[in-house]
Length: 314
Length: 321
Image (cartoon, rainbow over the protein chains, first blue to last red):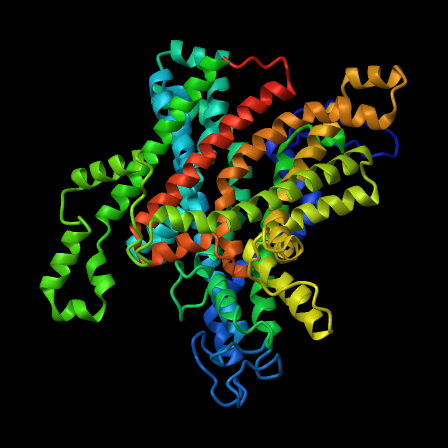
């Protein structure tokens, strides 16, 4: 919003230089500007957008390549000895032990990774925020119960438990999301609880209370907006953790069930063949590492951008 | 101090007990039949056999009774028998524990010492090539899933070297320390690196951030003004204050350690607790699963009490009460 229209006096002629209108910028706007100037963040953002596009366009891409995600190319996709074939014109990234195109499978695998990664991270953050707010705001009795519960969840040997849960409930994508969210929310809850404990003592909360605002209103209208920055940072950093968690479950054979491709079960399949077919291990591994790296770097940049002290240090 | 310890021990026991109830409940609710699984193809032919095996295992009793039996045996140090190998669970754990302990302790030593050391080096030389390299290493290390790193290490350092005629790194397996210390070390080197790298990255970043902040404090200037050597200022005055959050982080990492151990043992074919528990889960071998989960929970609780005690050692101002 330019102030020039209202205060023509502010734009007096300063010689040849054109006076710049004073512009009011919100903290969000400042953070966004900082993020846009960060080349690493922009690069990672572009990578993630491309990845999402690839995941959404998996079907057209596989039609373009000419192979389906579970289609076995028995003529050109497997050697006479029954081994995977190396990258070639027909299969750009080679084939796996069943003659399936690795490129197409990686493309389809990105759907799983993104859906589970983002789904689990968002679910975990929502649960964590609600529980953390309740624990921090509703007083010592609620706090003791919830904080102790979070301690229990955090001291679970979670991977073992996740394996057990998936085995009991039967593997599926939704179960996977639920299990990952169940073991991730407590860390968010702890952070939100700590912040809430500090914020509830602030004067404006007291003011809201004396105006007659109810607990729910204070928690979600007065306290929650102050937690948005750490929550955004935590969500961006939780996505790669969830993606790795998903891949690990699939690798251990309790995630996405073959033949549906996921990066984890592809790498698991490659374990018996990596000595004769490096592409079978390296390309799905690369997809996984690049994706988590992009989210981690972006999360780091978002944290720096949201931290007003960054510029002083800069 | 003693009161603090007693209180922490009591809450620790409560946490472990809660976990035992949850694990027990989870597998009781599970829609599977151990007897059918055990008997395999015999089950279909003979329903009477299924019923008698179920009875022998005590699985036909109400859950409260089963849990009661379990607790009584547990308090006598008896964790029951594996449904599959028919060996006492305590024996199985005793066999697997040295493998896991070697793996976990070695990895922890590597990630703490190297992580803190690299963190200190990059904090004392901010913006140098070493600092940038360390930051890049930390972020890349954080993004490497354990099993991808393990398999890539196997491919390059075992297989590629093997093809090139160098057989330094073995392709997996475990040699007991008592049998051949050197082979023990060589066999565990790649698993240690695999398990340590991701966690080490966290320590590099943590140490660097903390130390940069601490080195800006007034008392550091005082220490320098006294004419202390720079190394003494960094390690005795600076690092000491930075160690508290590192200790906190260590407490957190102990809980996640078992996860890394499971994956690492799977990649390198080490028959430790992690591999044993994954097999137990896929076989519905409940006595083994419950024992491993309980053991891990006890371990986490003890480690966290240890970290709290460590606080008091690191910072005399912290009074345990």
